[in-house]
Structures are given as C-alpha cells and as structure tokens.
Image 1 (cartoon, rainbow over the protein chains, first blue to last red):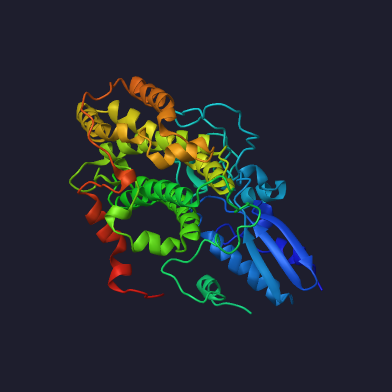
Image 2: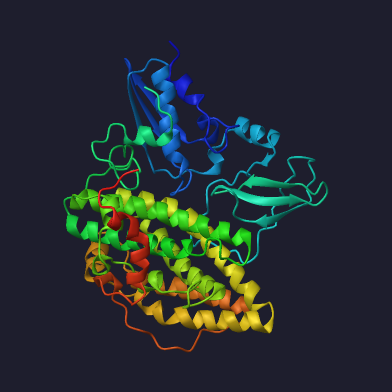
Length: 163
Length: 293
C-alpha cells in the first residue's frame, strides 16, 4: 500500500493544477496510524475558496488508496507564505507560464511599511525570459495572482504575488 | 467514497446542511488551541469576535456591490478580491463567536437583525456605487478602514487568545496590500485632473466624520484589552493618523475639516444605510428559511 503521505503529496492544487499541494506548501502534516490518516492543511488566503476543494480532493484520493478513516484538519498558524512554495514548485510555475514569487524571508519587526507606488519588482517573463515586464494589476484571477505584461514579447502573464 | 463535486463531500458527515458551507473551523481546528483561558469571559470573547467579524462581513458586502460597476475591469477584480479576504476573516471570527454562543456562522450572518450587528459605521455607510458616493469615496473608505484594521490586527497578533492571534496574523498580510491599493488610488485620483481631485476631496469628507468611532472603546474591548485578549482601539490612533497623514501629504491633500458624527455600531446602533444592506445580504436566507443547495 502506498503511504498516506505519498498519496497526499500527489494531490494537485485545484486552481494551479501544475502544482501539488505539497509543492504549494499548504500540506503541513500527514500522520498515519493503522488505516486512520490525519492530514493537516493551511489556507493560502483567509477567504481562499479552493480550501474546500482541497479537502475534498485529499479525502477522495486517500479513500481511493484504501484509507477508510480520513480526517482533514485546517490550521491557521503559522500563516502561509509564498516562501513555502518548493523550489520544484517555482520551476513548475515558470514552465507553465506563471511567474513565480520571489523569496521574501521573514518580515522585519516594527510598523508595516506603506507602499505608495507599485513596487518596481524585477519579474522575468515566463515566456521569453525578458526582465522588461510591468504590472497591469495587483489582483488577478485568484487572490494569489497579479497580472503582468512583457514589454518585449507583449504577452500578458500571471505572477504569484509574494505574501 | 468518492464525490462528484466538492460540495457533496462538504455535506457528507454533517447532519445539518448549511446556507454556506463550513470553513472546517468548528470541526477541525487542530494546531490552534481553541481552549479559552479561564481568565477570559466567554461572552466577552464572543462579542469581540462578532465586532471584528461584523466589520469584515459588512464591509465585504459593501465592496462586493462594486463588482461589474468599477471604472475598469481590473478594479472589479481587485475590489472583489479584497472583499473575499475580508469575508474569509469574517467567517473565521463568526465561527469562533458561534462556537461560544452555541450557534454558527450562517445564522450569525443571515439571521441577525441590524441591532444585533456590532460593526462600526464606517463599514456600513454607502460610499458608492449607490447614491452615497463614488469610486473616490470608496477609495477614501478603503484607505481609512484598512489602515485602521491593519493597525488593529497587527497588535492582535500578540493576543492571549490563540484563535484571534492566528486570524490576525493571516489578516495582516492581506490588509497590507488592501491599504497599499487604496493609498495608490488616492494618490492617482488626487494627482489626476482637477475633477478627479475634487471628487477625491469630496470622498474624504464623506468618510472622515466616522473616524472617531474607530478609536472609541466599547466596555467589552476595555475589559478584554486588560486581559491581553483585545486591543484598546484608542491605542491605534497615532499610528493610523500617521499613515493617513503620509498618504494625504504625498497626495497634496489635507484632512477634511468636518465634524464628527456619533458612532454606536459596537452597541448595535446603526445608520439608516444598514437595513437596506442587510436586506440584500440576507434576502435568500430569509425568504427560504432552512433551504439548502
């Protein structure tokens, strides 16, 4: 029998199906005692509507793999960050035309800085590799994505924004 | 077992069906200690969760009114995304309140009357797209609301209540870009044409009378702040003022010279804008009691 961890790690993200839940960093823990499995996941954003879908997919795949007692738990702490997307995940995103987030590291303590201008981030075009890209909108088709355009190949593309 | 769609699996295992499916919060909040310290008054904690949850829920409803009415498609998406973040925060806070009070997030959202809501007036007033305002007024409110809520949640990450602390830590990340989005629009509108600047100035004057209420503590907030659970909103004033002054200064604007209006939202006293807002938000749940999908 395939281990519950192996099964859970292969479940795809419903909104970014090029990534597994493990790649995305939302799969926090899989524990297995006999045929009982407890999987712990964390939401990317407070209102992420995909969370219910993730629970459902995990439940289904583990049940198919023969686990009869499956519990999916949600944890809020610590809060998800794009830094938890695996290196493999970043690579897969680029390969599928989505610019990956930069690594942000831990936030400095103290007041949260106000940003009065859209940050001039260097985001490479996932299609042609050009660094000449501009942000069209900080908000894209899902909470986690911004919309950008390449000034060289002129293709629009999405970027996972750092959080 | 397998399911044809995500919704079937959500209903599975629940004896009662719901208007909106649960967050998984009440059933499966492992990793966050949901125990309530014996030094914390449970009713106070529930009431406080309702205050912060209602702020987010009611304001999310207001933001959603813009969907398909914003000046550009990107802004429809942006405001809907911001509303979704707040709705997510509201669901967790209402679930927490519901768990303590023996009810649930759906009943709290859909079946309470105006006088039972505990949100501040800034969340409920009509800033557009209705007759109460326009896009500039909406950005003025987004700036003030998110600057205030960010300061509040930032402090709340140190709450003695682990659920509040976890919800706050997640919310801080979201409020940070809500505030930036509003600030950037205020600069853009103030720095645009004479007309856009005039509208921005007028918009700030609509929301400014509601500022004082944001920093006025309800007795419950006082008590819980002393217990290390809540934040005394009076402590947020200097930080919020400084953020607002920074944005207004960069935009070449000054604080509107307008008188404050009485608040009272934390005590269940609301403006005339609240009833129509709730009527729209609750219409389906009230028209078809107990209906499921």
